[in-house]
Length: 132
Image 1 (cartoon, rainbow, N blue to C red):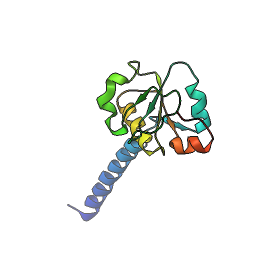
Image 2 (image 1 turned 90 degrees about the vertical axis):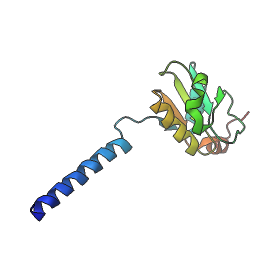
Image 3 (image 1 turned 120 degrees about the vertical axis):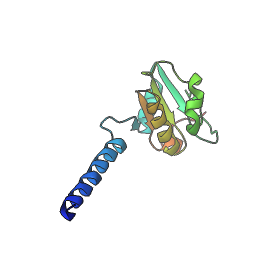
Image 4 (image 1 turned 120 degrees about the horizontal axis):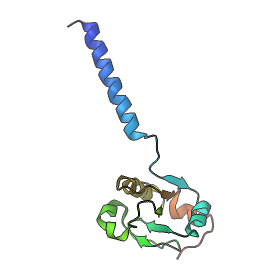
């Protein structure tokens, strides 16, 4: 085969892989949103929300927390999660790292209304908001 043809084929394959991976890494729809502590606090006051602390090890909870589920074991505790996949689920941890992982996992499980506390309880406390 001609070297130019081989080069074009290789470039085409690489381009296809990059496009596919960029779609997988950056889908058009976000799996969850991240909000400020004040917005998270406002959302906790709403009816029909489910609040999960996913920090490991267990920590003091934000008032209104419905469940503590380890971020890396969410799928094992499906019996503690709302049956309705449209329920607004508010997720937090200490810094925001574990809750982003948990939020992504919840999205993979089919939940469609997930909110992450940006900065976790560290940011929450910095804003002067209450802890249990």
